[in-house]
Image 1: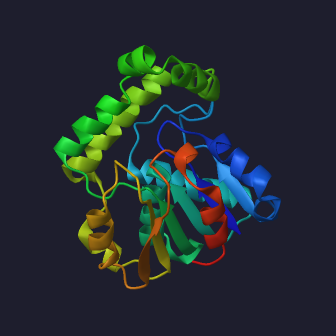
Image 2: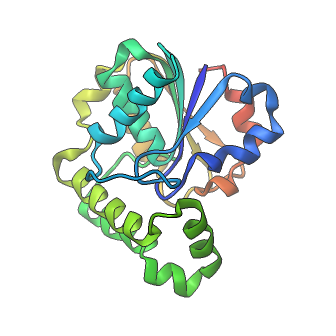
Image 3: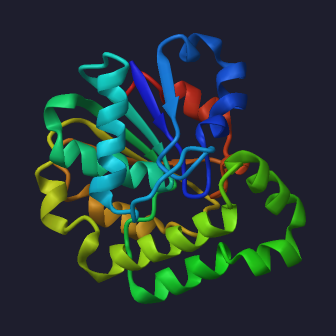
Length: 224
């Protein structure tokens, strides 16, 4: 059983195209919306514990005792947190294009990428898509809260290096070879800390989910 975790400003429907192309994977997989995403209300500030506990709550509600996690971008970071804090619930973790090196400089750059004013000006079609995805919630408020969450990660609220050495389940860190957000260096550094971890690049793939070769991902599912 796989549980798919979406990225920042994304939603469970992010994986619809993948599931439609690979129905055999869909049969044994779930995808959830994090609080504040996909029309799900949240009155709580984002944190690793808050987002992580929402996954455990989802598993409990759906009778999932243990599962494999696939996390894209932010979803991968939450997946690693869960493997650290809830090892009895997680069989394995596969992350894709997950940022692991959080510094104030990185946060500033990422906040710029999700600035609603810039998105409206440069990619109005993206703004329309997010407005639809997160309705009735205001996607601009979600973007602001996500920006605050990134600041938390860079100021002591992220995963410490010691957490990775405590993750004992199999972990596969995937990075699109053309990813301009996540570096190979940060992935290689972190994977050295995980006892049962390995790192692999996805050919001809960028950071955005739409830029990823889905056939490569399908080939790796069930092979943690």
